[in-house]
Length: 137
Image 1: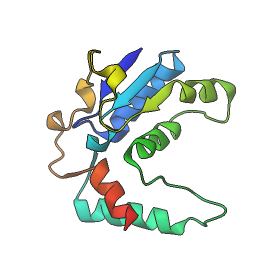
Image 2: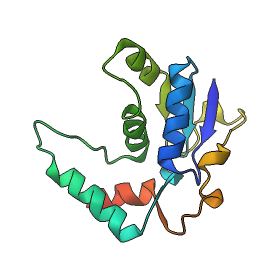
Image 3: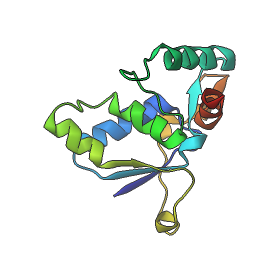
């Protein structure tokens, strides 16, 4: 079982790493999902996701969650073949959490070096928590 701390990790890069590990059979728990980041200028990121959210029909979708943990899990689902059996089983092995639950307090939290925003050239970014708060308005 791998416990990943999503603080200051780029959401897409983290999701590709998690999807690959899940397809290989690893059980992955992601904590602090609200602190993951999406790179880009704040205004353009917020308007892009606001438009995606408003396009969807209430009965038909597409559905974009407004909670940070479910938002990250939705990004990971997009990188899995979730309509096939192997993708469905991999998706069940991935769990996302807001903050750090009690059962992971004594576990060692891992980070992904390639997904860290400080190692990237991206100067501006938005946290997933801020993005989800903006979508709730």
